[in-house]
Amino acid sequence: MQSPAPKPSERLQKRFVGLDGKVLRGSFDHFQDQKALQVLSAFLGDSRIILAHEEIAEKTNEIPTAQELVLKLGLSGYIFTFDALHCQEKTLETAADTILNYVRVW
Image 1: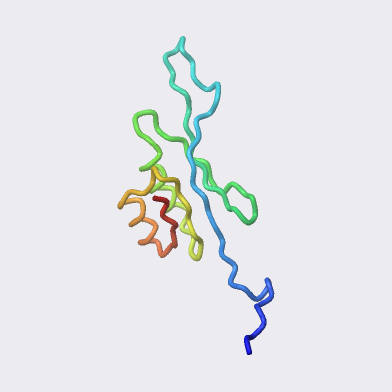
Image 2 (image 1 turned 120 degrees about the vertical axis):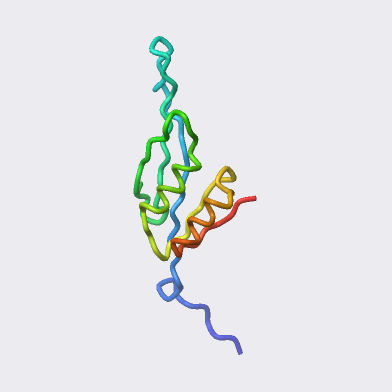
C-alpha cells in the first residue's frame, strides 16, 4: 500500500532566483556616441520581487556582473537560474562556492 502524497504545505518548497540581462530600450544616444544601457536583474520567482538591478559596464558584458551579483546577494537555500550565456565554469563555481544551488541550461 502506498502512502498518500504529501500536502503542498508539507512539501519542500524550492525558491528560485533568476538572473537575466536586458538592454534598456531607447537609452542610446547617437549624437553623444552613447551606447544603450544594459542592466542585470535578479528576480525572486515565487514572490515576483526584483531583488537587485546591476548596471553592466560599457566595456564588459553581463558575465562578470552576474558573478559579482551572486556573491553580493549571499542567499542560501535558493536555486539560481541562468541563461546559456552564464554556463561558464567561473559563474557556476561562484554559485557553488556560496553554497547555492544552480540550474545549468545546455
